[in-house]
Amino acid sequence: MAIEITIDRKAYRRAGNGERLVFDRFSLDVKEGAIVALLGPSGCGKSSLLRIIAGLDKDFTGAVKGAPSSIGMAFQEPRLLPWRSVADNLRLAAPKLTDASLSDLLAAFELDGRGGDYPGQLSLGLARRAALARAFAVEPELMLLDEPFASLDRALHLRLRGLLARRIGAERITALIATHDLDDALFLADEIIFLDRAPARIRGRMPIAAPRGQRDEILTKLRASAEIYHVIDEPGNGNSEGAT
Amino acid sequence: MTRLVSLGLFLALWQVGAWMVGPHYLPTPAAVGATLAAEARSGALLFNLAITLARVLAGFSLAMLLGAALGIALGRLPALDRLLDPWLVILLNTPALVVIILAYIWGGLNEVSALAAITLNKLPNAVVTLREGARALDPALDEMAQVFAFPRLRRWRHVVLPQLAPYFAAGARGGLALVWKIVLVVELLGRPNGVGFKMNEAFQLFDLRLLLAYALPFVALMIVFETFVLRPAERSASWWRRHGD
Image (cartoon, rainbow over all chains, first blue to last red; front, top):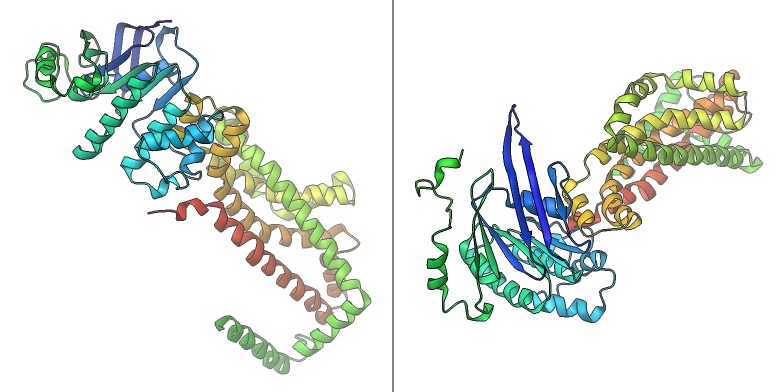
């Protein structure tokens, strides 16, 4: 079943007074089984959108139809339980996880032998991998990934993106990946949704047919075709009229 | 080692003080020791210590349990908190003695009134500590539990309680010292047994040997409990913090 998201209005109260409008008559539909990247500048509402789809944020006017109940999510921070081991963190989210699939999963995210460690013993990169492994452990129908590579150094970022691309291609799930990095979107998604600055609008949708394994070679071409939609964070690129 | 020296020094000072002011105002350690031994032989010491300890533990557990439940509720439900906070402030600032006398007058001079008085005196304290803990619960972990559809029991056991454990331990540690002092007053005012009752007897006879013979072992018992039960419990409540870094 496709997911249909309609947000008539979503605003955050500002600390002083007034409010910041994030969505104004926004709608998006995601086909079942699609891997969709939400690409847009920081603060354009990507995280808000994921939180609304996940059912964490109910403070908006509109509706989300067709969202499955089985959701795996990786937040911007790992959000592991610090008083439970990595393996227990996975098991608590996915009680049906067998020992065999647990070790498969740990291996897939290069966490072999770290199952007994506590989150406090992990570096940020490892903790993020554990959080991703947890999201996959529940074998969700819908996967929500919010900036899965934020605040990792370049090398780790590329490595983890490779791991994720391999894993996400192997599963039959619907996934929404929020990112501000064009290459992340080009490597991971079947379709990129380009978002404008808040209040968010869809500037365009770009399907990517090439298999994930071959995108490295055609990256320059993909980047060029994304050019027309892409809103970059830096000011002065001609797209800043809506920003404040 | 330093502790032993300190203890020896204390006994020496006591001895010198006793020589100076006379046994009527301060009996010597030896005299107190003799009374203590006599009370122990007759079985009275053990009996009264046991009774008092039972009251301490019962009142303490009841107050911690009710206090935790109420504190968590107040920490999570701001409306309830606004409603009950003034009551809490009143109870916090009511002298223990007033609560005890009211309990005895309303409930009669019985064990239930005694227990109610002990519990009510410790309760606001536990509520405030646990309310603080409930307010400090991490909303990020709560959302995680929600997305991954943790059932209620799993959420409490693995997400909420580990966060509350340090507050619970801190409340327990601060609470025991409070409770045992209150229990003595409760016994002094309206119970026919226990350490507090014996102290009342000692007071009426101006018998300082008897007073100290009961006070010392009881204080010692509480120190042992605090050192070997409550402090380790507090440390283990946040054991996971010591991983990594």
